[in-house]
Image (cartoon, rainbow, N blue to C red; front, side, top):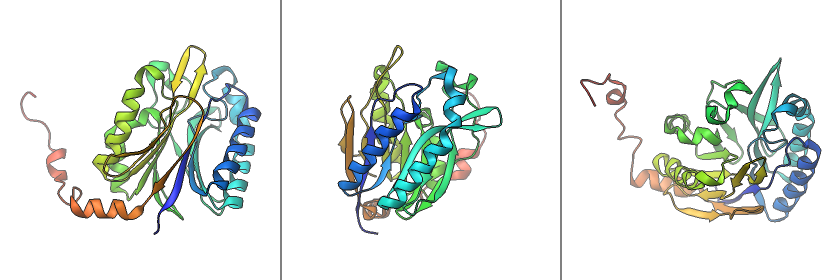
Length: 267
């Protein structure tokens, strides 16, 4: 496959205001399309942020939001990825949806690792199924924010055939260096491209740090955003993944039976 442009729509989500956030994203998608972008990643919970009192109401509007995304994906022949509140019965999940370039919903991933530090586990249901989506641009592994701290999930996605990682996040400023380092690590250790779209601006007392980035399979940061709203675009060259994996064949050199052995004695 030839190279293509991929982007991150870094913006300040207005808590609880689905209509205003959707309007901003629709206009941004139009701009990314004009610039030739074929894959676009949106932030975590981009329709409403973490406005817990209105979470179920916002989740009730998600089907209409998904219709808009499907329409624009089809109109612009663009793959879209982003996290939204999903209502299932009485439970709300933090779910990333993936639309292929024909407008079809090709997969949905419910966030597995809930950030107990901010009490996400009290407001969201927990996902239990990793997801790799086959799209017109290749196989995409999906992660959401806190998932990035768990290398075993990224490795599972790579072993399941992921050629790219798409990460939606709302990562705060005090730990923004963790975000940047972990995004590079997940790309390098799994020898694939990683696109991380973070939020920016304030939500209550939280300040989100931006620093969305496109990272190569060698861990090189190809493009990186600042801490304000930004339309970030980088070039994805699938051949780079194949070439690097051929040069240093980490996957063939794995020894799974050693990792699965029970530890002996004290560490």
